[in-house]
Length: 139
Image 1 (tube, rainbow, N blue to C red):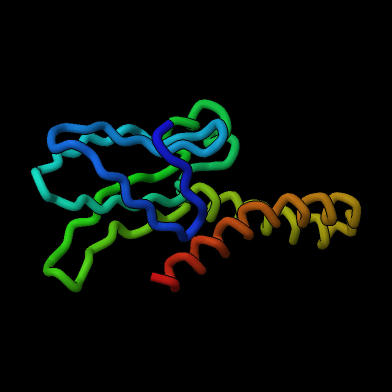
Image 2 (cartoon, one colour):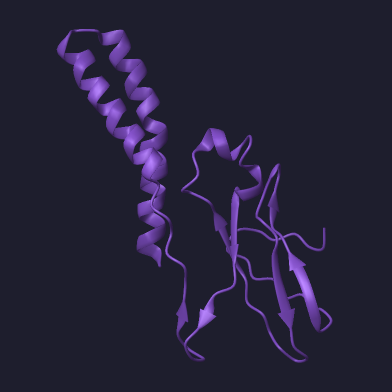
């Protein structure tokens, strides 16, 4: 570990010119390592964010190596930056749709207990999709 960074914090790390490998980690999850080549006197900007396109159960188990997104934004000029768009959480959208359909069926058949359980389960993908929409609007 070289340094710790908090949410919305900027960190400046002086490094020697040459090739470097950079990786972000949060608890058990991490980003894939990216290679950067730093020229003498060059400033390299890197960005990180949660990988919201990855299903939660995959992210905390077999997908923990891609739990964090790390990228180097390319600049058009000194004032305007281009950022990679946030990936659409398709799996969560489909999951939410299926859960809402099941909720409708449970309500139609009068199964209140099942409807409550399904509604609670639907909160997880709905919250993630809401966070994704919020993050896209902040850009």
